Every structure is written in structure tokens, then in C-alpha cells.
Image (cartoon, rainbow, N blue to C red; front, side, top):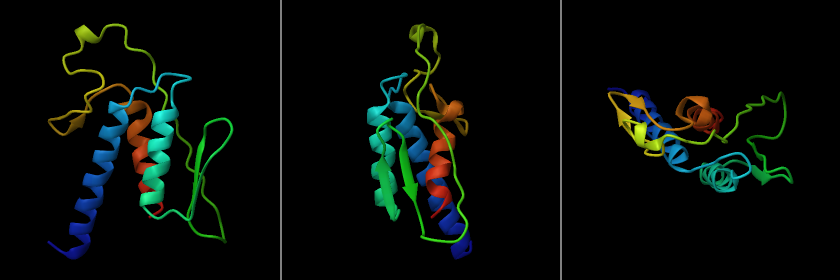
Length: 121
């Protein structure tokens, strides 16, 4: 395996781990603060040039300082779980089963948040 494939496997594992961590954080509408702060800290750890959380609770990360800009937009809030006992896999487990991430927000859209955080590095 080449060095670039090893790097890709490492980054892929980190993205999955971030998505799992986000699924484990309950972030109902109006209760997203912990998830937003978690994303902001991850951006700082990854070396983003600037990371801010605005008055509305949006986290904004910037890499670089010029040229063209690309905006990646996503959200971390999820709908409530009214029937947790009926879930085969707990809704906030972040479990990966048969290569698929399970849990509230795993599709809409915490996996996309994780990918977006890594997109610029």
C-alpha cells in the first residue's frame, strides 16, 4: 500500500470517528451547543486558521487567506427520538454495523458535517 493510501485510510477512519462522536451527542433543535463546540474544537485541532461561533450558534471555520472561497454548509440538529425502545441499534450509539453508521443524525447530516470538517485539510 502506498503512503497516499495509508493517509487516506487514516483520514477516513478519523472522519468516521468524528461522525460517530457527533451521533453520540444529542443535539435537538435549540440544544446544539455541545455539538457545535465539539465541531469547533475539532477544527482547531486540525489546524484551521480561524474558528468562530457566531451569535446564532453557527460554527465558522476558515482555512487559508485569499483567492476563491468555498462554503460548506451543514447542520447538527436532529429530530427527537420518541420510540428509542423500538430501535434495533440505540439511536445515539454511533455504532458502525456492517460498514454502516447507525444513529440519529447519521444520514441527516452529521456524517456530512464530519466530511466537511475534513474537506479543507
